[in-house]
Image (cartoon, rainbow over all chains, first blue to last red):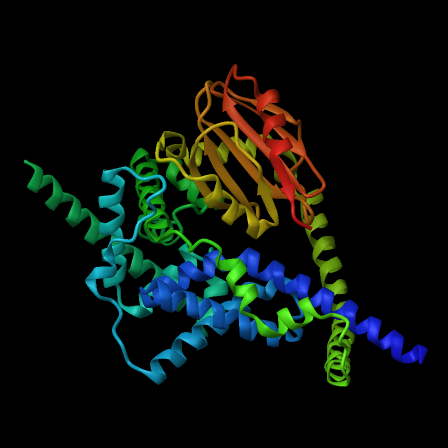
Length: 185
Length: 259
């Protein structure tokens, strides 16, 4: 039947388009989502599972993503929901010290490595309500408005939390700096 | 603006380029120094959080998406179920088309409002693209003093978000940041060259051009060139006397757009 053939070829065209959209999403966002997930759970394996699960769900619901520009907050919302499910299933604290020294080995000197570890440690110490907006801003490049939408908060609250997060880090890191200088005397 | 508001806004967004912040900072060298300190802190946060991504992650994600692979490997086996599923897809797409009309109207209204302000505001007309690029560099002058190498892979991970890829760069990349260029998100990077550090801005131009004005610009310290492309405007700024043309061509030839 010609009608049947037409709908068959339409199916193939639609699937090819859907596949291309999906591939693009994966290529564009997997790195940033992985980093965001890693800093939420501080475990590389769990981070990879979270990103995988996020994209699986994204594939199944891809038709509901009408505006490609909304892809980032959409994926982040899925990932945060997945992360919350993980806590419903089992309550673990993954913020142990062993995961502390994860640095980019490609291009850092010893000094940079020490500095990165100190900064990472201080970020890990932030309360979750400050840490998450900061991660969305620094790792995902989200604006205050986008963060407010993703976290379902008003923008002023987000700005206050970003201020507190960065201010705490500023003070903690200058304290660390003084201690380091003191130790090397 | 008072001192408290200034500090608060700079802490929250150290790479904030708002005119009132820039003007306020100009009044006092201490303010300028505070901006530089906060930008340095921001850069160290970005670097500390920029952990390596496991190799081949994107391929694994695709390989582990079962439905994606079913269709990928056996496109000829279109079952009735698939057709039924595809009907849903078609419906969803036609909803998209319906939604397109108001969206297009909103978009054109946005362009019209933008055009109105752009043409009616003398300040904007006088504020050329070259001047904007130079102001941006002076605002983040610390970006020229970095030395830690950032790999091309890291550059491309960020660039992919704007839909582009760089095959190579003429020198070691030492600074990499997403920046706001009059509301348009673009890439700001610095690489080392025989002629000192060079700054490159890659700003998507599909929605709006980087700015008007001469393509070649300079001041007492820097010289630059704007290359206007269909996908993005590339702006290269180097020390006065450096062969800007030659480097602009090398950078432009290395850019690929993933459409």
